[in-house]
Image (cartoon, rainbow, N blue to C red; front, side):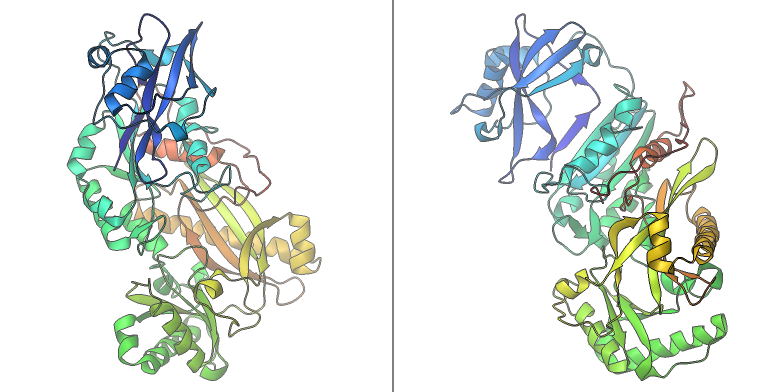
Length: 524
């Protein structure tokens, strides 16, 4: 585990230009060991310029850092302030000639006295491997370094709006055990800002790349909240667990205003004891919801089409279609008995027939005006299924089953592709979706002190006839999910507004941009 700070630089410069090494702001290097980036310091008018240069080999860590500074080890201890053990600067990971410009105002000399109190402190928990994803940017992948560059230094970020007024302590974890070793009160004591918040960037599920085990993760979050330290990314722990665990789906399917298809929960202990009996019980529950909530008649079990799902799973990797009782049992077994599955429950849901597309509404809280900025998007559907790959399914049991892709469609394309040119039906679908979003935002206010800084609500859309459309809620996503070609400006400022509760200068909350640019979709 490596803790690093961001938001200010403290140096005791030598009398002549020299080079020095600093801990990597992003943590572990290849091979599992943290490294140092050696820099050379050449003051310029108004700015300091750092350029990387190779450190001398065959020196111990202290000697290597001293050599990088151009001082003796004794002078290093006298002139520089370090916290923690020094670590070696691996020569093979240095890049010569790279310059980084830092405003001179962001430097303090060693005798400058006590630094000012930061306006905001962020405790950031993230996955250790930030270098393996080759993509330059992502708006959802927590293992992509561009994700964090956008969040901390992109448009409307704290790096842009609060230079020198914030601090970030980053915890890099490689496994669940790393989270269990953390001490919440000690972590909270490090944060000196007027405002403090925790941002979590690991996926709670089973052990794996980018994942930590769900029970231990939420136990840690709740311990931090009891210190107290607010969970501001993605959400408060209780709300986040409902969202990523899909725990909200069965009960919300009982209220037709939320447009959730009839859903029943299946417990693994029940299924392991009698798979067929558990499947029958789930289908009977769904038929009861069809009758009492939607006024629809029951369907013969063998012709009934539905989907099975697991919570604490992303990108549809644990969603499989079924038709009939035998198919339901088979697909539940595929999910429950996967070697990495630790879920005690799964979901059985009625399949929405005749889906023509997926409509998504991205909601970002404008704290300044106490309103919600909404961005509507249409997504293409595809037959490819990540669940089929994960669970080694060569042929899905329902041929017409499709999943949403990451490809957005312009409104005129969606009208033609999804509605055969029926503009009235498309506008009706968009209006109905906006109305249901209002219901979900009211639900959010019952679950947390403030509306979510960012959430994405996804709808399956059908076109049963001319001038007609129906929308069904298929996902209520957490902050941090893909922005689907919407740029990061809104999510950045909404998240920063959430972190800053008190600002003596009156700068916060900041206004939400009236318009948010779109990108090509490459980040999504």
